[in-house]
Image (tube, rainbow, N blue to C red):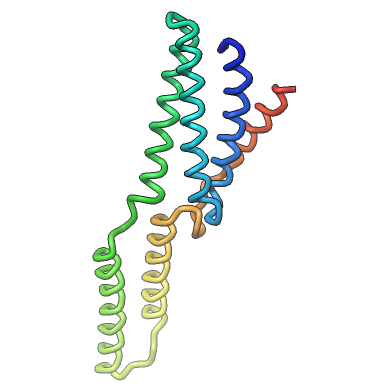
Length: 165
């Protein structure tokens, strides 16, 4: 609903933005995708300013500016969660320290009792490994088994590109 020439440029920028957001799910593209996304946000903001200058009382331009602000805020939250809010090193040290001490204690107890390895010890070790693996995967989304499905963004991009024709 933006006036021309902003409409065409904003559409092109939004398609580029979605393409970079899709690439951000791949670790090799993450830093470049964040940089490009922020660059495109600046270009979108320039288009919003130009549209607002051409018609300062336009409801459509006001809604576009509000929505663009939400996109920028959401981007900031995603970057903060994915890159800047990692589990601190002392927490990792304690977590692995507890796991190591637990294994040492199980081995010590098994040595005192002079028993062979039981299935319970194996299951406890497997559980510890599974929990540590899950914590690492949750701390580093996109690098482990925990991945966000990018299908909605891909479908959005396809819809935007098809409506452009």
